[in-house]
Length: 353
Image 1 (spheres, rainbow, N blue to C red):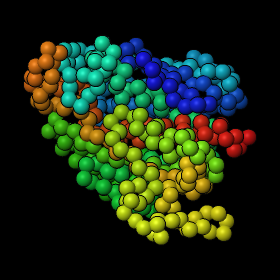
Image 2: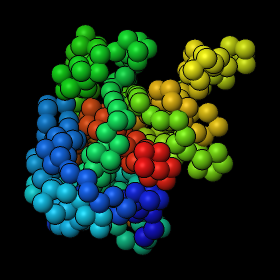
Image 3: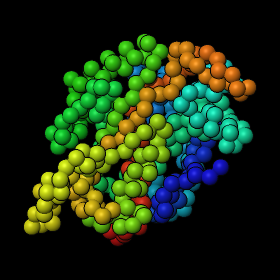
Image 4: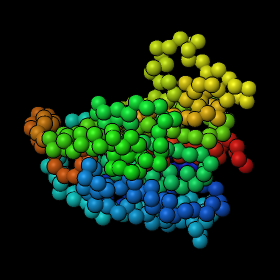
């Protein structure tokens, strides 16, 4: 199977399945001499882990990271950083009913047709549990670029949307509630909506907004390796993501050039930032901001029509422990993938070296 690695100089390769012995990864290209804050890595894992509130999957995993190489006395050595995250709360029998069936909007059918085999336990390699390894690497990447600040938050759950410009948002409130929405009044409405959807055995989608500040000028390349193209690839590689837009996004298509152009200030900054901090594929020093759209979770705890491996359409009800809405736990994943992209371009550009 190809496609298990991400990045150029700062490169992550992941391995493991949802219900295997462990997940893990190898980080290659991390510079030597970085004193890692292990507590910061643990904190990021706690933000992503299952079972953290009543509105996420109740699978109980501590997601403790065991580093195997590349770190000596708390400092990176420049060699590959190997790590594992043991799976300690597998309930594989929860998935025995889908051994011979394919769930709608899951990877079940296409995976088996492509590879001739699949691990049906929680989706195997296709499970969003794989993102735990990304969060470890993202937490390391953040420590390579500590000057750059990355803040993601939930800006929509279903039709409930936070419409404030990010400049009016207090990022310190993101972690103050289970939804990770910085508007506390909206957060209550979002949480109530998720709980109601969960009672119905249904699921709901949402949007995560990410703001990246203190980005130096010059990250990204002007042709295929544009900064926004790599950010888009990173976000679209996350499970359940169906859309990515940065800067003015689709609203920019409705504007005239005279409205959309970001006029310069004398110091090279711009009066507006509809470009979203990136011009010609290269960071311009302004804030980078983008939105990531997540679909509703495909596993429903209610009856729906599925396809079996004999070509019959049958009725089946989902079982097991699943998120009714992924966006609260997706926030640290979005930040991690953004950090991987920025750390990679930082090393490529040698801006701070």
